[in-house]
Every structure is written in structure tokens, then in C-alpha cells.
Length: 104
Image 1 (cartoon, rainbow, N blue to C red):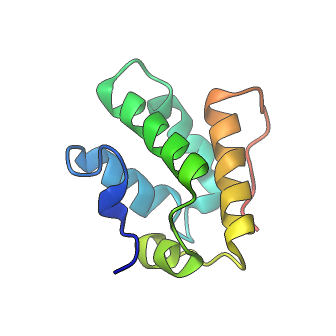
Image 2: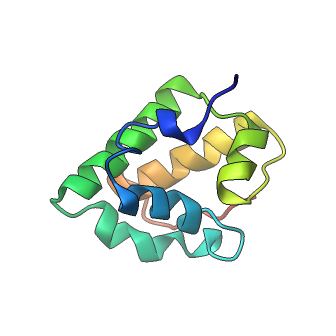
């Protein structure tokens, strides 16, 4: 059996985390990722779980393009493209990136 979102740290415990992935990366909302930045950077358990989940995804690269599409309904052309975009989101939320990333 392949990877599932249930392997994301915090997935079991945080409905808001599950909602974030299903909504923030949905095709109709993916280019409005900036509306999620405030909640992603607050000093809350949810924000800490979100950051840890993105770090897990970027470090492990566990999701295939097909698995990601099943989770979010957004299709990337390749895993490199998917993880490049997730890295841009991470840098926008937690790093020095000031401009909002635009999905390919």
C-alpha cells in the first residue's frame, strides 16, 4: 500500500490541519494561499502542527503526484514540481519569501 495523508504528523489530531490541506491546495483556492498565512503563523498548536507537517512533506517527499491529487484535487506534472511549490509555500509562511507563490 502506498502513502496516505494519515501519515502526515498531526493529521489524526487536527481537523483544521486536514481542512487546510483539502482547502488551501484545492484548484479553486490554491492561488489564494496568502489567506492562510495568518493562521499558519500564529502561536497555536494548529500552526505548529501545520509547520511540522510541511517540514515532514519537504524532508520525506512521501506523496506521489497521484496521492496529492487524491488529497487536494490539484494535479502537478511531477513530484519535483509538487515539492518545489510546497517549498515555496513553506518559505512564504515561515521564511523570507515576501511574494505569494503561484501554483504551476
